[in-house]
Image (cartoon, rainbow, N blue to C red; front, top):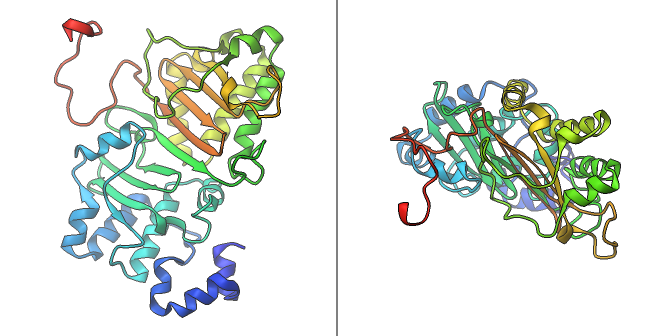
Length: 345
């Protein structure tokens, strides 16, 4: 049952508890977003204009505030927890519409249906607005259960989506094949690619241990990439890789997706990527070499796609126009001509 139907019918234990809660029910069961949404900048500006100054101080920071660095590395933090904040019903509805404004029509059917978000939608998240809404430098960040959603488009450094996107879902927890998980099609696309690899390619693609999931910094042209090169794949296998990426991008706005593809093409396209799977993510009952790995990674000079499917979905991706530039906040002070490590560092 979706949120709109739940509110209309008013049945079941959740609806009963909401009625019992009286005026506080909207803290946890907001109205569904309107069919026609304003832009993210318009909605963020409207929200900030209606909250009291103390709350606005918590909701909004400068574009180059250090807290955005955590989000640049795939972490979360800062802002205001929507459920606990002193917001009116109208303001909470604005927050829901603000989150949906950063999603495609497909994304609006996926992300709000993740476990823990299916009824409360954006309400279980923290909201942080970096910069001035409707300006060229503004990033809107939702962080919460299995979600770090960035809204606002490419950042000043030219990184797609403004930086890494993080998503996940616990439906189908610890079950082979992720049944019922909203990202199951992405998992299936990865398994389709693995099944289509030749024995030699499979051997090259399977690594023993999954990497740290937040290791999503782009490496640049001099990076070391594991797995099987996409450049050595057949056209059918390359189409499978493209489908994996298309499904990853599907929840996000069309303009942001177009720029992300432009970033990929500027850095060698699909042929610059490598695909890897991880033996420690195999189904417990599977034999080595089977198509049972639940975690995969696509990586190239300026892009990382990491999909972890066991025990449930944790996924991260980071796509940049310039793989040599660090993703950070503030202005670049200087560049090292060589990598610094050991005594020289």
